[in-house]
Every structure is written in C-alpha cells, then in structure tokens.
Image (tube, rainbow, N blue to C red):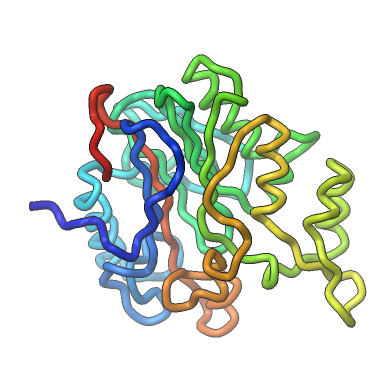
Length: 277
C-alpha cells in the first residue's frame, strides 16, 4: 500500500475539474533532521542526500507518480513536460521556474521556502501548470513575468484563452514579513501603477517597504482574466510566521543558517478519473 497523503499537507480548495489533482507539502512526514527537520525536498540546501531521497520517495509514493523537479533560478522560463522528461533534478536538470503539461500523469512541481507557488489549470481540465514566483520572476520584464508566461503556455496546451484558466496560490512569505527596498517597489510600480497598493512603508525606516507578494500575483492574474483561490495574505498562509508547519528561507537562514524546501504539485489523471489525490 502506498503511504497516505499526510493530513498536514494542503489540498487546494478550488473549482478545478475532477481529473486535476494538486497538493502542497508541509514540513510534516519527512526524515530530515536539524534545520531541515521534516519533509525537506531540496537537494541544494545542504541536507543529507539520503534523507532528501527518502523524502522525495515519500512524496512520489503518496501521489503514485514521480514529481518533476526543476533547477529553479528565479527566472521566467517555462518547460513543457512529457513522458520523456527526466523526473529528478540533478546536474543536468532543466533550468526553469515553471512547467506545464497536457499529458496525464506528468507531475508539474515547484519548490518553495518563501516564494509563491502558483498552480494553474483550465476549466475543462485539459492542461495544468505550476510556477515558482519570487519577486524577480513575478516582475519579469516589460510586463511578462513567470505567471504571464506560464498562463500563456497552459492556455496554449488547453486550446483556450488565459481567461479560461483557474489558479491557486499556495503559502509564501506574508505581507507583514516581506521587507524590500525602494528599488523593488519602484520596479513593480513602473510596470503597473496599481502595484503601489501592495506596498506599505516600514515605519521609522525610510526606503523600506513591506510587500504583499500574493497581492501582486493576484493583480497579474486578474489582468489576464484569471480567477484565483488560496492564499489571501493572512498569517495562516505565511511561511515565516508558521514555523512549525512551513520552511522559510528568510526566517531559517538568519536563525539556523539555511532552510528546507516544500513542493507544490499538480497533474492530470485519466480523462475519466474522478478521484481526488
């Protein structure tokens, strides 16, 4: 019998078609120790390789499929997955910050530890995608960031317009913890004046702002006509404030010298598959 889905992992509450399966892992259910304690899925954070391999096997066993891990670089590139795509990240892994597929069983996966994971599908369940959205990837260039590029790819695979997609936003660093400088705020405002609403000045610290990462993502998705569920900016979704549940690079790097990584996964079951994960 495969191991069950851990009760602490998040299952998106969104109106996706029945053949679309998705989840977001937490720290629960793993074998890593120390600063990586729990289900660390990152091979690049200094954890024991054997522990990471066991954790990845735990995830694969729970969902009955092998997640496709990418070499994430805080960029905007999107890779299309098919059965021939390598399943494990390593020295030859593809550098990309998002993936999309229309093949059943291919598991689009992104790892996070403060950055925002965004899952996408169309309303008929013909294609899915997953994006890793830190502020650099979210901003992108000339209005084209990782969300715009992933949405375009998923929509193309599904044969619909981006407005025909649904999105789910997972946990990330919250708007009371994500401090950035004038340069980051100005870059977003230059791209879209409405982004100013997602920044709050840090009292007593000129030139510093608290950024609402999920709010910025919702603005980008709304501009494409894409409805969003999940992260509402509350503390329950904040990776920094929920230390027992989530890894956080910003929190743990200061206190412990490093942090583990969680994963957001999305995949298509068979066309007639109505089961949940």
